[in-house]
Length: 231
Image 1 (tube, one colour):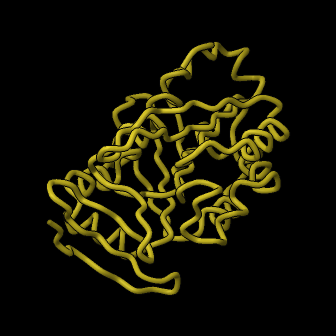
Image 2 (cartoon, helix red, strand yellow; image 1 turned 90 degrees about the horizontal axis):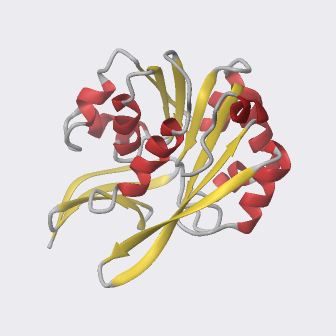
């Protein structure tokens, strides 16, 4: 059983928020993006990355993609975080969160540590100074092989990954969410950062078992500062 909660049509097409059974579901141009039934990997995108940082207060986090808000809420749990900069390309999605259509996110967006920019994450990053963040979390699509917006393919290539590296402070970390494995993405991250790793997270979708994937790259300085070896 499904119920349409909100719908908007913009320059990138149709954005839909619906309730299916007991879960909220977000779709773009008819393509499933995420829901509230399976949130572990969105939360792990933040928790795994922040949890491995053996560093004190003053962490600055940039999140590419608000989604249904689970990554942001997980970031804010960490008391060391003093700034969470959210970049979301869909203004209507942001409005739905602020209106309370997605429970709990309105309060997170009102947190004094949160800064929100509506725009393309590549363009927003270009406008930020080098070394602007300690952690960069990207969940802007379904991954390089299941794109919602074809233009996002560039976000998984070496030129953009080099920009991400430059925007990270010394010892910073980049983490990327993907719906599937991607040898090309892993190779590109290793080319840019010198080292990167992939973690597969088991997920049950209805009757089907699958995996979602997190790709993490860190600078050499992070290892020297006490980066733990295991996820």
